[in-house]
Image (cartoon, one colour):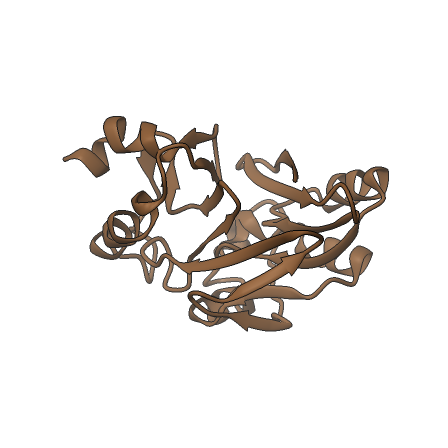
Length: 207
C-alpha cells in the first residue's frame, strides 16, 4: 500500500491519496482544497479512485471536493452525522473561508464498523464524534487516518457547533488508543505520529 500526503489550502489540511500498487485502485481522503493539484497527482499515478472519503464535513476538508469528484467520478462518502455540514456552507464554515461556500450532497453514508475495499486492501470505518457529530477515523492495515479527532500531540477543536470535548476524548480513549502501539496516525493537519507515542506524550490522553 502506498500513501501520499498532499498539504492543501491556507489551512494546511492533509489530503491523502492511498492506493494499491498491484491494481492501481485507490481512495482519496479529505480533498480539502487545490483540487487541481490532487487530480494532477492522481493522473500522474494513473489511479482508479474508488471512493472519496470525508473524515468530517468542515470547509477546510472539502474545498477541493467538487473538482475531485468531477475529475474521478468517484462516490463521496461521509457519516450521516455530518450530512448537514456537507450540505450547508454556513454550518461547514466554508462561507467565511477564502475558497467560498461549498455545499454538496454525499453519494452515500458510512457507518461505524463498515468495511470497504480497494485493490488488495480493506478499509474500516470508525465513528469518532467530538470534533463534529459525524467525524470518522479510517483504519487500513497498520495505518489510522484520524481527521481532526487526533493530532500529533493534540486533539481537534470542540468549540464549533456540534463539537463535544467529552465525546472526542471518549472516541480517542475508547476506540483509537486500542490500536497497537506501532499503528501510524495520519491526522487531518500536521505531522504523522504513532498510537504508542500519543499514549505516552499526548497531554489530552495521559491526563
